[in-house]
Image 1: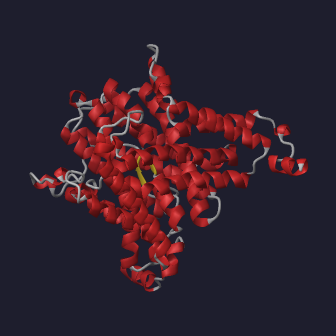
Image 2: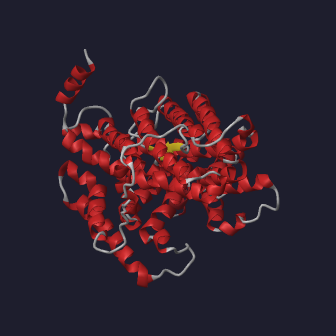
Image 3: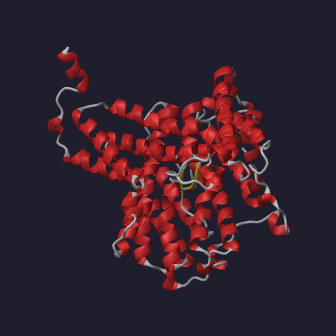
Length: 481
């Protein structure tokens, strides 16, 4: 049967109930809004790490406007390819789950240091080599996954939830737009319009989910984004259209180019120290990927992920990151934001999420489309995402509850949160590297709550003896009564 005939047969059996199944066709008119919701929730976060990193590296180190624009196009293009492969695997690469991938903030500090110290050639080569290693590691995930105990997976998801809350509340309060630091007094005289837009966006999302009936209630995030955007347009300067300016044909249609066509590179740019450091950060991102996949299957499908899904998902993240580096892009991982959407809506249909991937493909070739997505202001994103981000934290709590609150598990949870997450609340702790270069890279890892909580939970899961477990705290309280 020809591909077109197969698709006609597939689409002929479309049904609204298929939204809540992995497979099956859904009407295009229904699929596109759900796919658009996924794209809007991740689009800005997919690009911001690149802009921050390249700006920090600076023009003097090769981060020219042309290189930055190419990296942005590569990020969108590879997010589309990565999402497609996660949905529809190639060989054993891909999870066959409704996963959306994008550039991870986890790599931001490490890439900035490598790019500034060794140059963009070394940075992109390190991304390529590190991605290949993780891709291979992912193919053998069934061999090592068993060493990560269920309580550790729950801790990782809690860590992801905590880290996303920081991003969500920063957008909700529009700290970057107002030029305000986390510890600075909030300027209500300038910030009230941003707060108003954020609250309106949040309230619309909540009311939509509470009042709308049927399947359309599950596009509450999209409804909040649209209404919030329209309200933001009422405040001059809140929506910035400068990125949509067209000066040449390249501003209308363009494709990402291999990094070596823009950045001088040679054998001398292969730095094994930089590769080793970035590989450590890749391992941190892999633990996040494990948590995201477990969170997605738990919230969307009501089960644990299979070995095949974990193996394919991690392998895809690695291979796609390597390809992204080839085109001058940054490493990509499973996006927790989109896991939150799946968890809240229960829409797991791969055909639906693929509509989002198609939108990413189009945006990667036509800059005006991607530029329009970038005009969505931070309070609109924060207002629509804050509840989704918090839902990841709730999913982690639910998974911890399923594992059980034995003495050992309570101790692991307490120390992982108290110490692992707690020290990240004091960024000044990592301000001094004492002149030891390696400490700069170690501090970057330790500033990541997911990395800290994972390391502590993994060690404690083997160090604390099972003999510490008596009756659960709940049982003890019952006996005491």
